[in-house]
Amino acid sequence: MQLNSNQIAEILPHRYPFALVDRITDYEPGQWAKGIKCVSVNEQLFCGHFPQEHVMPGVLILEAMAQVGAIAILSLPENKGKIALFGGVKNARFKRMVTPGDVLQMECVLTKRRGPVGIGQCGATVNGEVACTAELTFAIHAG
Image 1 (cartoon, rainbow, N blue to C red):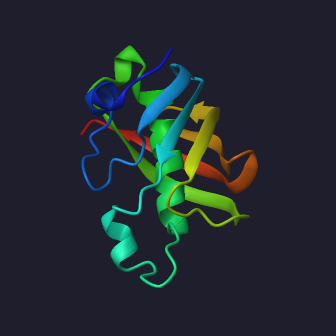
Image 2: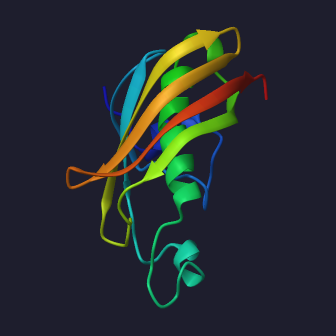
Image 3: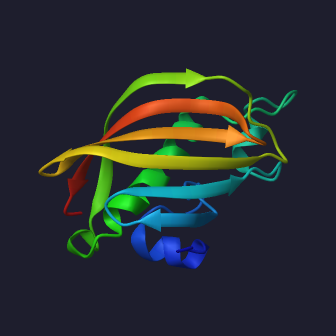
């Protein structure tokens, strides 16, 4: 199943400039999701990071991966209208710079859930090269 940007906006509360997923390429509610972010030089973040050499900040790569994971958990009918909040980041590793023109392909597999708290194993690649990996903890909030 795919979701376009309008369908993603029906599930996630994020809006410009923090809507960091352009398309969900496939997902299974409550289990996993895959998505893409098309990185463009026209994004505001490149005005300051860094003007002389544009690099997508690692924290925004983590946020984009978390949004993909949020699709996996918030697409469950019982979570409609709720939000997923960061609870923690473990073992984040950045292996490659992400720059304008890159297509960031992300995946998040939900590995554990206890009540409103869960963990996702996430990864992001560009052209098959690992850009980032991390374990993200989230908490579901009624919003």
